[in-house]
Image (cartoon, rainbow, N blue to C red; front, side):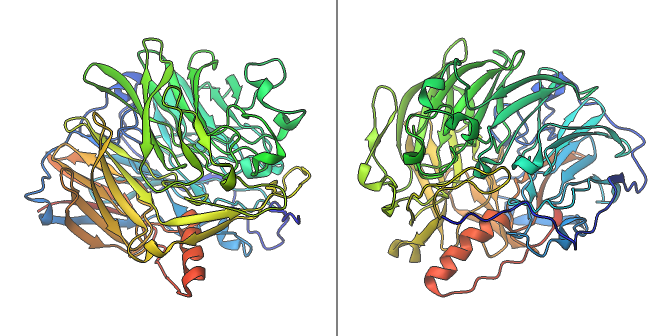
Length: 578
């Protein structure tokens, strides 16, 4: 099978020096303490899902189903032109804004797809400072995006497409330190927002499609020095190594795309681990721990203290990199995960934080499994739908899964969890032998996606599930695919974008009814947030369509002979009631 090099030299690349393009700086900045991160003020949004548990819920309740139709734009501000990536003629996908804006006492900070970080005045959208990180000549990112920053103390932290971790002065945007965590020429890169927890800055690496060996690394926030580094693929002699044949562990994949959730009481960070490499499991027999899993790391030492694998011997490229959402409900500590494989899992966390299976069920149609073992939750694979050497196998859902990276949200008052899904699409693979070459795609199969006949009714949807009963409460359908992370609010309204018509919507949390919508300047793939200013609740969201949302739509257009044009956007919008 022919493999396509992705990391190649480019004579047309225009480099910018990594620099702070400071507009005016910030005179007064509130340090983000560990205490504030563990219990953020209702009016702020200090980390990507607001709270460590990943619930994506704001307790602010001024905006309700009764008055949400009165939302008006307060201000909007462009994130600015792309710096480095405009020169990449061979860019494999349009850049996408997938980061939430963070809010800290009137200062808003956001990352852009081309590794810029921008600070705004939350009152009027005026730019306070801008930092641009230069990328090395020859790097063409397969996923041109950045999913956000972390705040701790008086610093802003972000991870880059050339596998570096950078600390900025939060007042000025000036670089404080910068450290390479891996070699980008070997296929390693970062797209996630770091996790600031236990006095450390943690980040997980992407690049499973290049046959990397995935890891999570913790760094000292003051110096950037490594505190610990934990690989997601065990080496010989480590627990789980028996699940890898021969030397397959060296190039086993196991990327960590999405920021982990964190339990401060037990000091455990839960991370999702993605696909094994190469894609077809027939090329690497065994369960292949810890791919397609959630792992729990001791934040002090980095030790893997618990794990749950959603599908052993991952062979459908169902990256299970979104960590479970943590909650306490009716006296139980739970973790709920809408897996890319099409099942929703309810897991229990014991007093030590260890994960165990409670129950699971389909939330979209799935035919690669005959079900789940009722005691362990282990997938019972339908062998007819497992890709084999030289034999094409079809399966549903496709590799993009029932949900991809976009976050769900949880309303603790209702006990409902809201998730953006895509259904009525199937995929196919045919395995072929492939040799590993550093920095070159290590796939072992092509990738297909085909909408089913039912897709003409709808593909995307928002679902609400009652965590107590594990039953679906409602579903709101869209003919478009759905790529919008969810925001839950204390007023009983949820917000999301994600469709190819560039609409931003408010839903009734109890019924799924669309209560308000507004077309913006581009598609929305970033998580909305809610914050308070001058005693008034606000909603903020960033436009910026591309990467997997655009690729997924491309497969649909190819199947149906259509041409869908979604504006890219690239603007930060803020809304409030009049």
